[in-house]
Length: 220
Image (cartoon, rainbow, N blue to C red):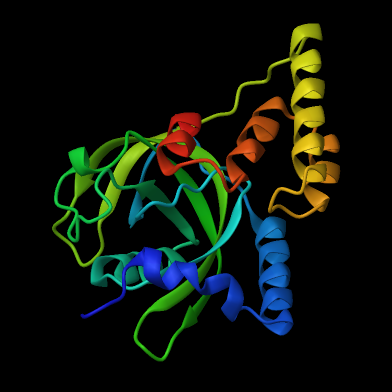
């Protein structure tokens, strides 16, 4: 199927979402949260390879998907509990993913909150990241790519030094927002309300001046 790349169709996505659609997304995510029991250990999940996008745990993102195997992956995941593996591919221009080596070693296991069929044959899926997913092997034989790997549990980190680092990061986020950076002012409030150091670290990846490689490094 002829398609626009993820970068092209993702670039206009925010502009396409009107208030009614955004409300529907928020409601879908809230409903998904109520039902979420995150898998543990090893598993095999349908895969959507990402181009120049990195999804983190707890991140909610609308994705437009056009490649045949990616569309099949979304449909398969939606029909089987909603769990999908999202991994950034090493070469953005790579059209077909045929080997696990073409993927980064760490991705994210996400839950699909909403799927919308678009007139051009692509899909729009709202996903919410849940856990880091360590990539092991790839099965390319079916209609959808299937990725085996290990779900990474978030370790609990506490202590005086951790708390001091968190306060420092929260202050930096506030400074970043008040300096006129292109991020919503609510980001500083959200950062102050985060008590999980891992989640706070992941939040810094949402800043628009970070490159894909920098975001991937933080994910790993």
